[in-house]
Length: 316
Ligand SMILES: Cc1cc2nc3c(=O)[nH]c(=O)nc-3n(C[C@H](O)[C@H](O)[C@H](O)COP(=O)(O)OP(=O)(O)OC[C@H]3O[C@@H](n4cnc5c(N)ncnc54)[C@H](O)[C@@H]3O)c2cc1C
Image 1: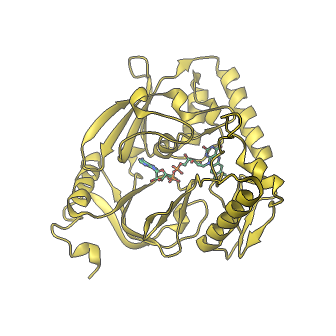
Image 2: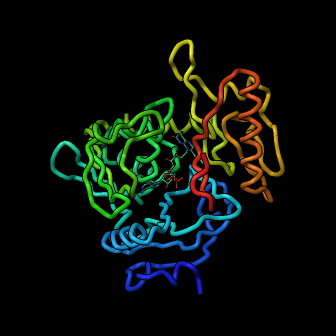
């Protein structure tokens, strides 16, 4: 019998959820590689999600949340424990026209790109800076996704969470402690975000979304199998300001460098992409070599932005 099914109390008994054991995860990520999760669980309700989180907490079962898999590499060996997908309709809902200063509540499973388009269509301003970023709302909040035009935090007034022990809590943007590609949210699952969007001119917002999308398409290999920027932009010691990791990689003449099926994109030095037949191990090998060569050349140790899941937990 599967290791997860012999646990007492059973994790999945009577749970309103779809459970797939030894589920391949690669197809659910942008890299399209990696091994299986012991269990991939898609709860049908927030109560079922809450029960699952509590049971995992009580049994010490590792639990991870999968968004749209755009910032994630799953190791070839796969991941232990439970991976949750917020794919049921209740987690995809976007509530418009709510009263108060944050008129939109977007649930964590909602698609960010569609949300940006829909807000523009409704003449709601405040999300155009995120045009073209592939993400679920939960993933965008967790990573504080953003770029040259701004970040997710700018639009968020509060975040609804289910903590790792199964407790619901509402967290203000100030408490969430958003910073560059990071938050201080407690460990757990983002359920929704309340967005403080303003009414604006629909055509102006749409034009802005189009312009930012075009900029991204020109400067990044959007159609390749990658997870966006592999490394965080490091802080320059002399100025205290962030500098482009892509530029450091470019200056180290690493564009096009490859190991197995993985390569540094010739379009953008901070994107590591995969060819057909490549593996997660290839991506990690390229990332390690890039880190080493940039360190040797500049003394800067690049930190990975892409999250890596493995059976040894989240790799540093
Ligand atoms: C072509 C391309 C372009 C990109 N461009 C950008 C860019 O311009 N700017 C940028 O910031 N990023 C960019 N990225 C990276 C990616 O889009 C963002 O990091 C995005 O926020 C990831 O969201 P996701 O839903 O795919 O999260 P996933 O990749 O599924 O997960 C990432 C992390 O978030 C956690 N997570 C996901 N959902 C939840 C939840 N509900 N609750 C708690 N934790 C959760 C996961 O457990 C994991 O640790 C790009 C990626 C690609 C492939």
